[in-house]
Each structure stands twice: as structure tokens, then as C-alpha cells.
Length: 216
Image (cartoon, rainbow, N blue to C red; front, side):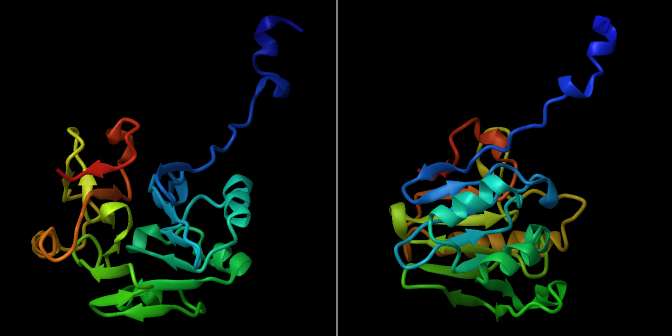
């Protein structure tokens, strides 16, 4: 077989190997970007009282095994409609509670979900805060651990300098409302609750390996 033919041989085509999640803070792991959610980054919060997945990771054997090795999933929190991905497959396998803001529950027909309007507590240190704008039911998830971590979905994303900012895209539902939500969420920090890190739900390549946005 000539070199030209060899380059097109099925034996020379390698299937990309899925990468495992990366621990970016103690007990917090970032999954690799997910094509099903247009390059979105999902997260796992591993706790002794149950694990929380923030948005849907790519549903492959590597991520399945990562979750199994850590005891499964207690809650799957969908921070915006674009983060749904393979939610149905994930819940079918792990029978976890799905948390979604009430305006986007209709996007998961036939699936039992836990909805909320403005705020919901998952446990004593983790709660969701409605931040409409990017999508009608967009929300941020706050974790009091590690000095305060805010998972922002696509509500706040890193810019080219790595700062957390709202970004208007073709999929933005209501830009003025998103700007109002940004102002409202910042008002909660740092006076009411500590905040040390932001974990955005996309554009994480702009963080250049840091994994989080540190709040000074």
C-alpha cells in the first residue's frame, strides 16, 4: 500500500479519547466542553451528602465512570435552556433530582423536575438564584465552600482578558433584563455572602488553564 493510500486507511484514523474532568477547586471538577451544549462547560460539586452536577456534561463512558466512582448524582442543576444536553439520558441512568427554573421546565416534557421562582436551597451551603436575561429561566448556583463559588452558566462569561462579564449573543433572550440581573447578583456580594471564584458555563478556554475566575 502506497503512503498516499495509507494516510486514508481506516487503521490510521484514531478516535479522539475523551478527557476526564479536572479538579479546579477542592471537590469541584470541570468537565471538558460539551458539543451537545454548544461547547458548554459542566461542573461536578462532590460532597459527602451527595453530588451536584451543574449543567449537562457530554454523556460518554469517561464521564459516566467518573460519576459512578464518586457515588452517583443527587441533583442535576440546569442553569439555562442551553445547558440541557443529555439530561434525559443522565436522569435515566442515575435517577437524580433535576432542578430548573420554572419558566424552562416545559423543555423537559415527561421528566419530573423540581422548579423554583426566585431562589431555592439545595442544602445549607448551596442555593440557586434566578438571573433571567440570557434565557428566561437562567440562574446562577452559589456554593459557600472554597470561600464562595458562583456557577454562572452563560449569565456571566470570561472575556478575552478573563474577566467575568455579560456577553450578548444571537441566543440572548432579553439583553436589558440580563444587565439588570447582573447588577442584582453583584449586589449580593461581598457584603451578604462571600465570593472568591466564578465558574462560567462556557468560553472556559479563555481562562488559559486557570479553571476559575478569581474575584479580587
